[in-house]
Length: 597
Image (cartoon, rainbow, N blue to C red; front, side, top):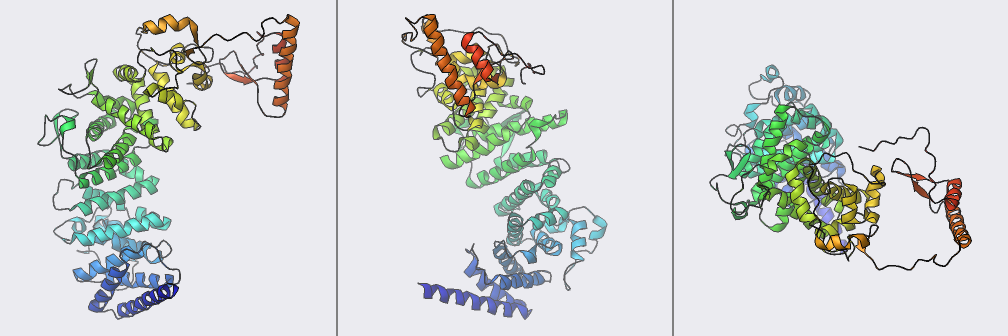
C-alpha cells in the first residue's frame, strides 16, 4: 500500500511539472490541455501535500498571467477552475491575494468596480488587458455594468468559477479580506443582486453572489455597515427574498405565494431545494447586517423596512422546505433573524386576518406565534446544544410576550394553564411547563436564566404567581438576581387581569410547600421535646459548622439584605443570628437598594 501511495504521489508530481512546462510555453492550446487534465484529476481534492507548495504557487502565478491576456472562453474557464482548486489550499494563496489578482478575479466574476479595478490593474504584470472602453478612471466608484451584464459575458460558468475562487480566498486569508474591502467588491455584487427579477442569471450565479456577500459581511465589520447603510441592504435583500419565494402582497404587510392566494399555509406546496438554498443565504446575510438593531433606536423609515421584512419572515416561518431536516434549518435561520428585529416591529407576526383553519385568540391570528412555540419545544425536546439551538426562539417568545399582551396571554394559556396538579413538583412531568422549570436549574447559566425569564414574563413578573408555578426553590436564582427574594413585582408594565385559580389549587393552597411548589406530608418537628437550652446548643453547633466551612472556602454563607438581594455573612453575623434568628446585618453606607432594570 505504501509503495502504491508513493507511486501515486510521484505521478502527481511529474504531472504538475509537465503542466508547468506546458504553461510556460505561453501557448493557449497547450495550456488548455494541461489545465483540463489537472482540473479533472484534482477536482475533488481538498488536502494538499506540503512538498508541492512552491510548484502550486508557481502554477497559480502562471494561470493569473494567462487570465490577464485575451483568451478563448474554454481557456478562461479552465484557468478559473484551476484557481478555484488551488485556492482551497490556505498555505498557497500568495499569488491570489494581491490587488491585481483579486481585481482580475472580480472582473471575471462580473463584480469589478470601475475606480478600484483600474487602480489595481495599473499595478498588474505586463501584458494585462485594460477594462473595456478604457474609460474606467472617469467612472470612479461606479460598478462596471459591462462586466455584470449577461449579454456581455454570456458564459455564466466563468462567472461562477470566479465567484467560487474569491469565496475560497476570503474564507482562508485575512489579507484577501482586506483587499476585497479595498476593491469594494460588495458594491459590485450588490449591483447584480438588484437584478433579482432578471431570469437570465442561473441558480449558481445567484447562490454564489449571496455566498460571497455572506462571507464579506461575516468577516468584515466595515463591509457589514456599508451594505446595511450605504447600499440599503435591508431593502435590497428583502426584495431578493421576496423574489426568491415568489411572493405577492394581497394587503399591506400581508404576504401570499403568487398564484396561490387564499391557500392556507399548511396546504402550500413545499419550497424547492433551490429556493430554500437561496433563501437561507439571504437570511444569513440579513442576520449579519441587523446584528446590532435591537441595541439601537431606529427611525420611522427604518421601522417601515423592518416591518416589511418581518412580514416576509412570517411567510418563511409558515412555509416548508423539501424535507423535515431542511425545513428545520430554514426555520432556524428565520428565527435567528426575527430575534434581531426591533421589538415594536414584531407585531407583524399578528397582523394577518384570521382565516378558516387559523389559530385564533382574542380575535388575533396566532399561527406564527404557535409555530414559534412548537419550534421551541422541538428544540427543547432534542436537548442538543441548547444554548445555540433553543435560546433564539425562547428569547424571541419572551420579548414578544413582554411587548404584546395578546401574545403573552396566548403563550400563558399554552405554557402555564390553570394549575390543577398540586401533588407533583413543578419540574416533574412532560408538560411544557415541567420541561421549562427543569431548565431553570440547568448547568448553563444562559439557558437557566432564559427559561426563568420566559416564565417570569408569562407571570407578568409577579413574584407570587411565579413561585406558584415554579416553586420558590426553582425561582430563587432569578429572584435573587432581580432583588426580589422578599417578594413584590418587577418594573414591567402589564395589564391588570384576574388571576384564575382552579378548585383543586384553592383547596390545597394552604398545604402547599412554597419551596417545592407541591403539597407534602407533614414532617415531624426535629426540635420537639427539646428545652430552650438544648435548642441553643444545637444552633451554636450549626453556626460553628457553617463558620468552619466558610473559613475553608467550602461554602459562603449568605443572607437576604434589606434590598431583597443576597449578601455575604461574616462570622460575627452568624454568631448574632444564632442568638437572634430575626437579626438583620447592617446595610453598608453605600448600599444600592434599587432594583436592577
